[in-house]
Image 1 (cartoon, rainbow, N blue to C red):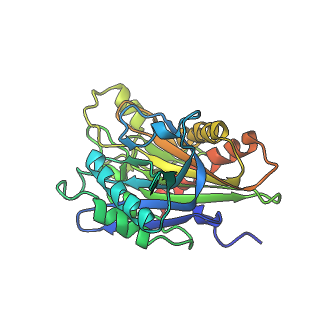
Image 2 (image 1 turned 180 degrees about the vertical axis):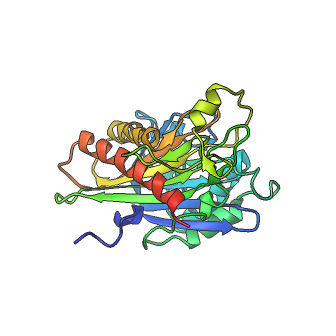
Image 3 (image 1 turned 90 degrees about the vertical axis):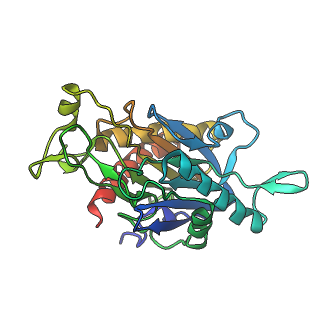
Length: 304
């Protein structure tokens, strides 16, 4: 029988919380790992909005994160990370630095300002609220949190479809768990990775169109995109291995979004390793990471 929780929170020690403004159509999503998790990141899109990514590079002093924030609001939305930092500091969680503990909270944003109220963006208060809402229950999906104002399939003359937050998980008999949560706000269409069938994206007269073909024949001027997420495992990995998992996980994005990683996407994936499981190779984990990212992307647009 399959485990009940088929989302990111199936991994012990990880909680996920959303804060949603349905009126302004924006929000943020926090992934809490209070005990600290080995962290990595890989940025493939050419228009990213991020925080603390350099701190996660292999060879840096800080190797573990205590939370990851995924947020709407473009660069303005990075302010919500301050609320996550505040919450963790109040719990005395962070990297020991003299008289204080500094919470390590990398973050990434999507551009959703053209969907709802462009003057309302996730802020410190919303980031703090997302932490209060965090739970180890199965992750809520669809138009919630950072995915509230997300859309997919954008090109001149087409109507986009709703994006959202999606999650997926793989459990192996060995005890290994690999899971992902993804905020899908892509320039491209979302396609089923096995069949190539469009499941969400740009439409003309109510029918899906091939965004890739349209972009080849048009001058794209919009930068209102970006898909961001977190892939996590209960495996014990080094800093370099955790980063490699983030790199391999991007294959799942390319399988499920066409096109992906464009000049107008800020596609970014973080990786977390909690370290309670041993004996699985980074190859196995990376392969599964790509699979759960692709599945999470499809779940994001199918959940309504």
